[in-house]
Amino acid sequence: MKFSLVLVLILLLAVAACPFFAVPMAKLLPADAKQADAGRPQTVTLHRTANGSTLTLSWRDYLCGVLAAEIAPDLEMEALKAQTVAAHTYALYRLRQGDTLTDDPDTCQGFLSDDELRAAWGDNYLQRQARLSQAVDSVKDEVLLYDGVPILAAYHALSPGKTESAAAVWGKRLSYLPSVTADGDVLSPKLETTLELTKAAFLEKAAALDGANLKETARKWVGKCVVRDTGYVQKIRIGDAAFSGPDVRAAFDLPSPFFTLSQSGDTFTFTVRGRGHGVGMSQNSADFMARQGSDYREILAHFYPDTVLTAGDAVN
Image 1: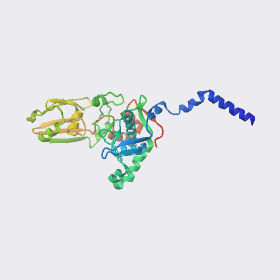
Image 2: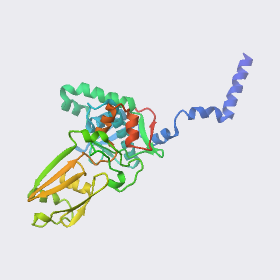
Image 3: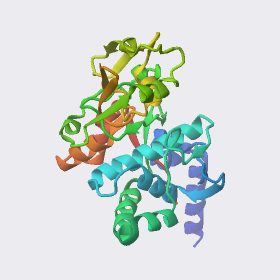
Image 4: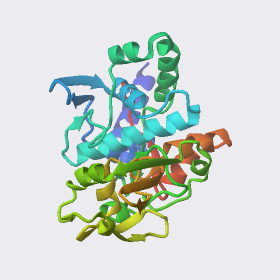
């Protein structure tokens, strides 16, 4: 007994004196994972724009609600997983910027509560909710990092066959948001849409473009258009000024800043390809890649190059 007690004391002293024994335990968590979790709240505080209320949610419930609002639940499971990681990472990025998370899809990410989904999905609720829950539960602890911090994981519904870079759209170069191919998008039946406007309707919409100053004669309302090598509109002259593709998209409520504008008499026609701003992951192409055999890791690596997919601490 005395020998055993002495041996135990010796071992305890050795551990206390030598920090080497603690090193392997520290290495069990990747350094990037610890950086990603630093400052992450245990719960999500979400501002609901419709009624001004505030919800406190678990990360799991928040991600399920975002997924339900942002992507079709019948897409391939690997695409749903990729969307979950992107939504999680995007939320962490916004929080790191000091922003408030809202359910406004134009400025943050959409969100639908469980009660809203039951009302919207009816008899399909259980099946669709089960798919979203499966996707979220399988990857809810994973985030995308660049230089050890969560990235601006932008995404959109459908590109015209190639995504746009963050530098081109927002004037901010982010190496993990370049222009990349999105081959599956050109096969989509929703790729192209057309919007025809009368002279009066065009004039009404163009009022949102500061400096256009459209005169009575409509034949000079549309001028030169400059496009990037991706096909997205860089600048187009409308009236007295040139405007960016995103500005025209916003003013005329177009699905995408990839468009052509033609005029025939007093009729103006936008022919638009894609849906969304075009930066980051194309949800349609993510689904296409999944159907071709790519898993969510490969999908994320394609749309967000040079990033690291890291598992953080468990999110309840």
